[in-house]
Every structure is written in structure tokens, then in C-alpha cells.
Length: 121
Image (cartoon, rainbow, N blue to C red; front, side, top):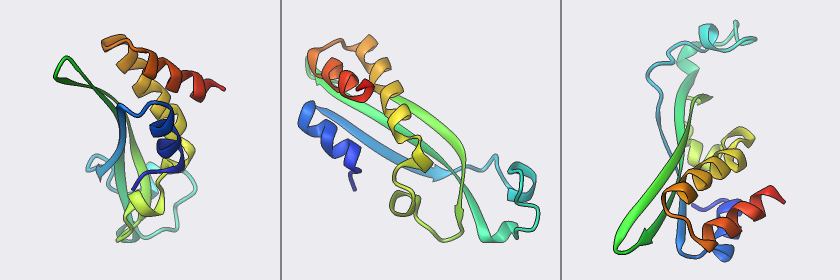
């Protein structure tokens, strides 16, 4: 599922794939210990996730990718954060900018620059 931002960037820079992936963050185990203000929560009701925004472009037959990661995003147990929190609690834009900036250093091109300019506007 593409977010609104990813759909807009696909129009601006169609040869760049931007994808958000989620995996369990096993380093975070107890929401009461890891998050301030959650002392009364049952840790079995929550699951910590790590998200990654990855930007990929194909140049010269090679896939070149750069990613930005964020761990410790707590969601209700059983939720799928790709559906319940697609904008990564509001951090998607900054994470996408960071991934695209890193990609621009690896594979400079006008499309990546156009996407970065859109994000900075």
C-alpha cells in the first residue's frame, strides 16, 4: 500500500521506488519500561516495531538503494502498522527525505533531486 506521499513522489519521480517496510523490534520488550507515561499498560497488549523507508533506483542495470530506519514504534498487539500507522507516526516525510538524500549521494540524478525539492517545499 502506497501512502499519499509515496503516490505523489511516484508522479514526480516515476523511476524511483519508495517503500516502507515493518518488522518486529525485538530490542524493545516492555512498553512500561521503554515509553514514558505508559506505566499502567499491559505489555502483552503492545508490540514494538521497526520501520524502514527505502528509496531505490535502477541505473546501468543495477538497483541502488538507500534506507532510513526508526525503531521503537509501539502498536497494539495484532495491528498491522503498514495499515494502522502508514505515516510512521508522522515521521514518514523526514525518513523519506533522509533516504532520498542518501540515494542522491550514491546515484545522483535529476529525478531524485526533484523529489527532494518537493519534500523541502
